Image (tube, rainbow, N blue to C red; front, side):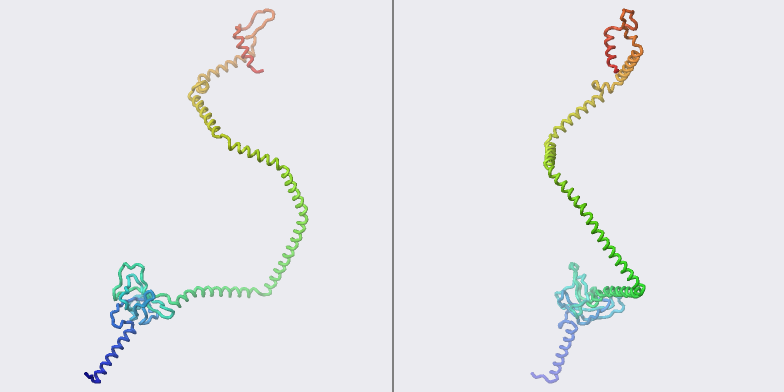
Length: 345
C-alpha cells in the first residue's frame, strides 16, 4: 500500500508536533505521559526561583516547579503562589511538612520538602496548599554574619579617630614640657631607689653580726636540748606510762561504784524527805527542832547564870561553915561538872 506525499507530510507534521509538545512539557517539568500530582505553596516573594526548578526531598529530585504566580489580594506573607508537582508516585508528603525555597547547591535554587518527625497525621492530597518559607541564602547568611563585625569596626574606628584628635590637641609645647617634668621625676625616683638600696646594704652588714649571735644562741639551745635528751625521753616515757595506765584503768567498775554510791545517797535523801530515821526526823519533825532550840536556850541561860552566880551552885567551906546555896546531889554535881568542862576557856 502506497501513501501519497500529502499523507506522509501530514504524518511527519503530526509526529513533529507531538515531539514538540512532549519536549515543552518535559522542559516545564511535567512527566511525558502526565499523571503528576500538583501542590501549592505560598511565599512572601519568589526569592529569584524560576519555573522548572527542581523539587528535592532529602537531596533527591522528586518533582519540578510548574508555575510562579503573583496573587495581589493575598496577605503579605502569601503574595506569591508556587505550583509544583511530584512525579514519583511513591513519594507522599506528610501533613505538617513545610516547603522551603533554598539553595540546592552553590548556585542553584529550588524547593526543598522539609518533612516532620511525626508521620501519624496522614498525607496531603493532590492540589493541597502546603505552608512555605524562605531560607536564608548564602549572601544573606554572610551579610548577617558580617554586619555585626562591620558595626563593631565602625564603632572602633570612631573611637580611634576620637583618640587621635584628643592626642593631637594635647600634643603641643605644654604637653612636651609636662613630659620633660615627668621624666625628671622618674629620674629622681630612680636616684632615691639607689639610695635606699645603699642603706639596705649597710643595714644588712650591720645586722650580720647580730644575726651571727642569734645563730650562736640557737646552736646553744640545740646543744642543751641534746644534753637533756635522756631527761626528755624519761618524761615522754612517764607520760606514755600514765597514758597507758589511763587506757588500761578499769573505768567501768569505777563508774559502776559511783553509780551505786549515788543511788544509796538518793535513797538516804528520799528517807530524809519522808521523815524516816533519826536524820529524817531531825529535818522533818518541827517539834523536835523546837525542843532542841528550847533546850539550847535553857542551857545558855544556865551557863550565863552560873557564870554570874557560881555560889548558887557550888560552895566549899574549909572550916565546916554552913552550906549556902542550893543543895545538889552527887549525880547532879557530876552532870554540872561535865557541862562546865565542855565550856571553852
